[in-house]
Image 1 (cartoon, rainbow, N blue to C red):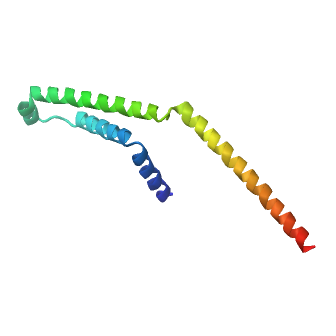
Image 2: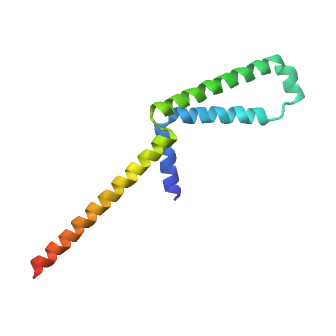
Image 3: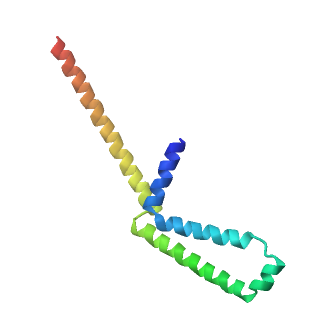
Length: 115
């Protein structure tokens, strides 16, 4: 199960690098916003902190929009993914049925050859 999770993570990182970057940027912004500011930090950073915060927010929003665009370009909407999964499962079922029929035919042929 752990190997499966690692493989899925590697696949996600390989196929969606922008989404990973956007997620990391968002996580950094959230952590930074949640950490309490010390008096020294407020004194030293002052107005620059607000500017940095605004710049980080702008960067986050740009990364978020870029990753959404990338995801949409790849056709990875909820409806599209659902349709692709249905199609995949349908094809898998058809392949299993075909394999089962072929196996049955092979067994019948084998039995007839033995008689």
